[in-house]
Length: 169
Image 1: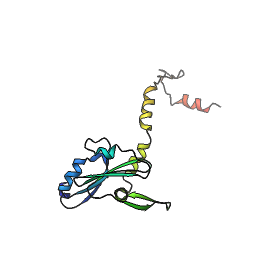
Image 2: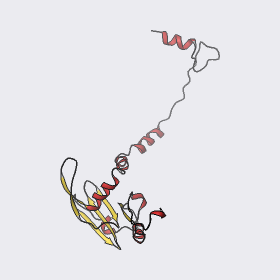
Image 3: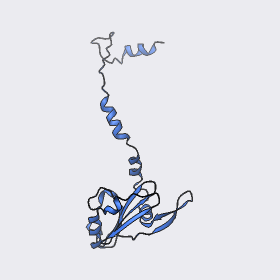
Image 4: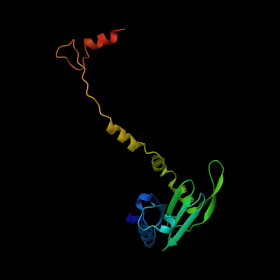
C-alpha cells in the first residue's frame, strides 16, 4: 500500500477496514477514503451513530477533515469520508423514480459498483447458523445390512445377489 500513499488516490473500501483514526491519518498521507462505517467502533461520533432517523433524513458531523454521515433509506447507512462534504443530490433509480440522496452514498455506490452486493445478500439471511444448529441435533443410527446368501455375509454384495434383487418384479 505504501506505493499508493501521498499520490492523491481515492479509495472506496468496506466497513471492516476502517475507523475514524485511519481516515484522519490518511489525510496526512494525501489519500482519500470513502466507505461505510460500523456503528460499534469506539471512536465514532456518537451524535451520528445514536441518532434515530425517519426515512429520507440525514445527519452529519465533521471533525478534523472527516465527515461522518448517517442516512436512512430502508435501513440506516453510516458513511465516513475525508473526500466529501455532505450535500443532497437527486438520483434516478432503474425504474425512473427520483429521490434525494447524500452525495457520499451516490459516489460510494457508483464506485463500488456491486462489490458489496454479495455481503448485502448474505446479511439478510441467517440460514447458515440455523442449518448448523439443526445438523448438530440430528443423531444418526448405525445400521448394518448383511447378505445372508453370500459367504462371510458382506454388507454390500455387488455380484449375483445384486442382480437377483433388482430383477425381482
